Length: 486
Image (cartoon, rainbow, N blue to C red; front, side, top):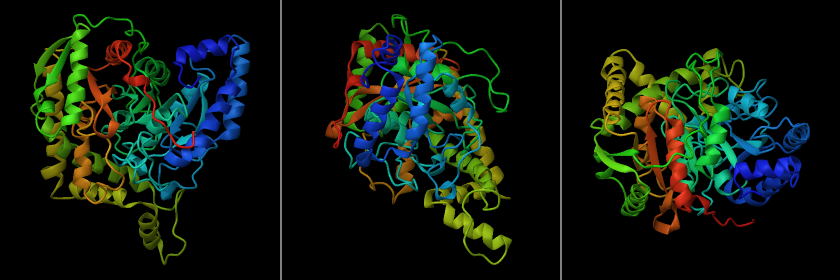
């Protein structure tokens, strides 16, 4: 059943040809067989999964099942889960068990999804390769010498390796879309404020947004629909009615205007990625879409703006981890200040320390106006560029990543090169727009290539509908890696 769509799995559950307990047991067995090669999971909740599955079977028997009831699910380890470890990929929280559920976790519990475990991630979601985790790097299921992308690399790898059919992630600068592309699955980040951040451990509060992973756009639509909604506990949660993300799946592409930003197709994209992206765009045109050239003139400034704003917010958000109330505390210290210093020095990894230092610097007296305020002004210009582009098109298409997955350790010594991997994704977060990545072919080394689709605010259904129509005509999303130990 693991290769079936959520719709088919739900139908099988209702028809009693498979039970939720059988699905959960199969998922747990796959994790046991495959995760030694991949390291996608930080925590596997065997007993909790089987208990939730039994509850799901009871709901199905009582006729109280929804589309996700009984479906195995993994949560990125940035979401708080009551009674289960939430480490955020950090030594700082290596022993933290949350006393409550994140809003997203509560919604999916209510929907009847069965959590089998928590997935690996870059420490505090800071990274693009899933190599900064205190639990060790996650490996790409297509080639275990390569990175899976980050920071939600564990979730993407778990879905790609068919350990779970769906998983949650978070996207601050591309952390859902980038690993989705490198692992050959579909991942979507919705409009900022559509998914509650309550119980989602913060990296950069004005950029963080929960998202969904699945093999297909159709499955992502079901998962994202269950995740979206207003939450009064999150001050950035948008109070509005949310549409069913599956509403646009059957809409044909005839008349759809796809914008191609000239800045996305200039320098920086590798030849193999360019070939796959061009072929995918040609397929959209074949399906009836119209291609329109647009411009995002400030897109080249998105990386420097992002790497001022995000570290600035991170330096503030991570100040709470001081060894006093919870989290890692140094074993020996002389006074309170020494405890703070040693606890943070021991608890945080190199990348988190780097971003805290950068963020503190740009917020300091004398540099706030020179860096932080200018970056915020650039953010507004980037959002205005997207608004102008959407006057001429309905969605925007381009590459998700400039290259296919690169080797583990290949870029860890050069943070700037690592950051440039986000060149096509960070502008979306700065503007707060929805975007997804779906499989678009393969590049060098038979590694997956993703196509990014960007929509206007609250355009999730249109994005997922376009991707679904593409996936009805192609089979890239059905391809699965061969994992040793399977």
